[in-house]
Length: 421
Image 1 (cartoon, rainbow, N blue to C red):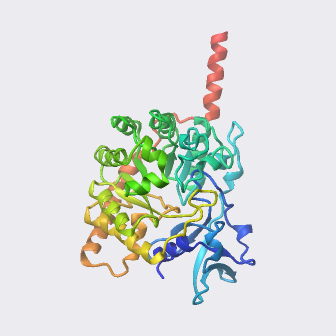
Image 2: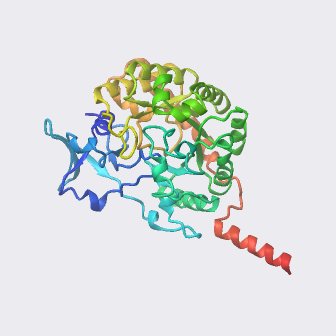
Image 3: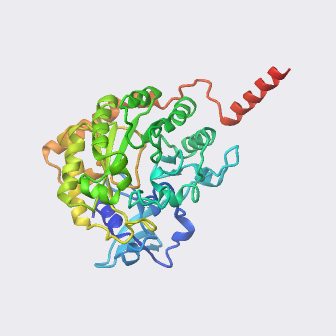
């Protein structure tokens, strides 16, 4: 079983932990941050072409009946399919040591941001407004309203974000910081500005932004000028009725057309392959999901498809997880749609995502690629080499006199003293 197919098996079924596996001692702590989709066990699946990073559900109800079992032996960790005894070698990914350190202001670094694969994910701004009151307007799969302010810090200062990102870059080799936020009305996108500016000026990383669409599409020109490298939009479901049922806040306050317009507009502003449309597979009919994938790629964006995860504490917790065979059809189309519409994927350095299979991951589902597929892979390989200098420039701090937060605070205090004198 290739690593992409194994990833789908584990995302759909989850994983049971053998009592003697030692997973509790060596694996990552289960962290319910952001929307809660990264609340599983971080593993690495070695493959012939690349190592796949994966966040596997282990704590959810559906995972307790999984045919997949984590075992340990003299040669390391393995996941075993108890239906036929097949085993696959994997590695557990431990939390970085810096998770337990604190910023100069005293905030625990893992309360600011966490690694989700090899990138740093940080939620900024207030709790999504759709969680206000009873939370009946919140998306059915999301637990942001239960996690932000409980399992992660509610308010994250610019200094804390900069410090955490710098440590992640220096000690974990992070190249990409992904910022997301909940709905906050007309000011949703602008919540990101000060964080983006500081990360680009003082840390020097690629920065992605995920937020509900701005009413004025000119807002994305501002994001581009600030240095944003990637923009993503979670519109979740392609069928408007399914969106209305499971994401009532998004459907009523924003509307699906706003998402589609923003994806198409930003693909023109940021360039092909720098924008993603994010959808969930396994809830609406597979034919609808396939249409969504093709549409996203047709406008020059790339599809980010999340296998539906019945997350503990979410409104959709009791729904069944999807079938891996159907998901393989979906994720083959992710790769094929990007190839068909010539959307470049996998060019940015050092980014492995554990919450989803990226289009680049999906290439491993095509085990005997035809000639056209092989030519596209060759073109992407050349593209990675050609794009490397540009990415290196974009990962340099814009402020040549990069300062850490403590230096900045000291300078402010010194200026105040001089003025007082």
